[in-house]
Length: 257
Image (tube, rainbow, N blue to C red; front, side, top):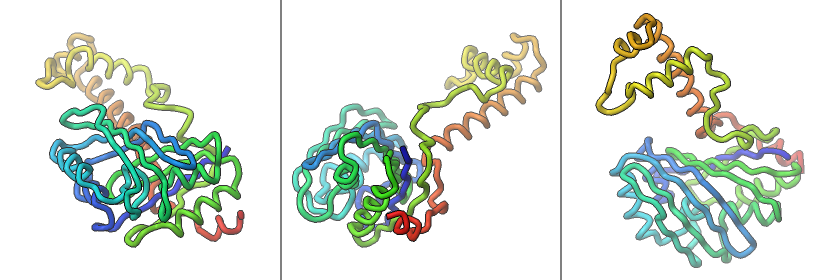
């Protein structure tokens, strides 16, 4: 199997939902599941971000008159679609959406399903102006076909770049594994959590925890700092981990056809 990673980038004003992501850099969306057939596409999206941005999302999606990134691609009049917020917190939403495919611009999942057929697996993630897609594909000819159809279907204000055609990198593990974290740093994190260091308000200071563990304060602080840096890198690597600047030359796709 091959992993095909590409990004659709939106100019401000091209899509009302994507404008929310552009205006709110802390707003983030990641798919939990995407399914598509020759007739319809449905998906679950997890959105996280500031309360104000999510409230604005609620208003925009309620009034949406065109297909948008949450539902599919962009630029096509709504054929028939429905959505439901399955879970709602001040800083999160889980949104179910479904749309029927019609004439004209169709959803990216529908385009992928048309060329891949049974066994379609894909992910999508959105932050800022970028909507990044990952597909598992069995051959390079299919990559070229999907690329050409998506490129030809983009509305004004949207651009397409390809980041990677390679062995799968992001599908075999979910979440953060502690395998790369030294045992003493892992123990420091576990102790900090146990003693309520990360609670609000904080239950114990580093000094108090170090006294309980009978290690120097500076040693515990160092281990926590290193562990937190490692966790931050793990998180960033797992979310939109391919920079949009890392582009594949479109001629490479055409040559593979």
